[in-house]
Image 1 (cartoon, one colour):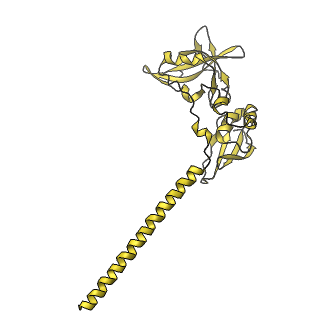
Image 2 (cartoon, helix red, strand yellow; image 1 turned 30 degrees about the vertical axis):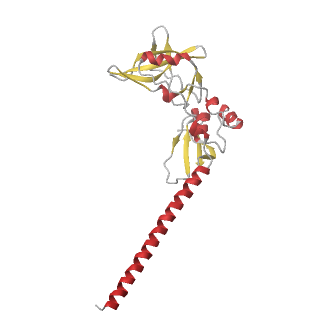
Image 3 (tube, one colour; image 1 turned 60 degrees about the horizontal axis):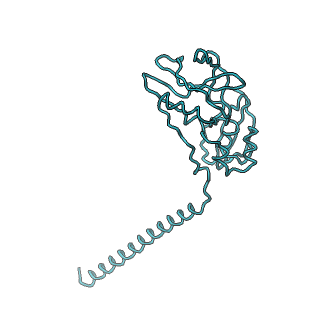
Length: 239
């Protein structure tokens, strides 16, 4: 290899290294620019105030701590989900053989007692919350006692603060629809749950839309959501 050819090869390699360095620098700058743009878009995007609502929890862990539920009014988070049973104050037992309906959407109740009752399931007892409705006593399960160990899920069942205060940023027309147990276009899923109780989503491959079926206390509805907002509300066939 002559000195002239060797020099040309070295010069060509230097040019390749410089070009590769410039290209790498451009890619890194572009990625950094895209990341900054994405961060800026997220920062400038409107924040959903619902994300900042933190409902109070009581964390009951046994029968005694669960009795704090009697010290304040409670609001049911998901209507038509929790079954009630007739309750005898004299015997301190619920009649599990006869169902007495369910708790309604955002129903406000006052718990009068929390008791441990014999469960229809062998090997466990149920923690029951007792309340009055129309002059009669009823009870519904809020936890289990298995082998002396308690599992109480009242924090998933109740709001301990008035939902209208927790979500006071919602406009009046939304709360009017909720109070009337109606789903209106533009409502989000939480607002619909407040209005007509629990819903069951259908599986779908469309990430932009969602179909949810609501039993609605015997008046079933199907609601289609797009981008998190109700766009279609239609009656469904009772199952």
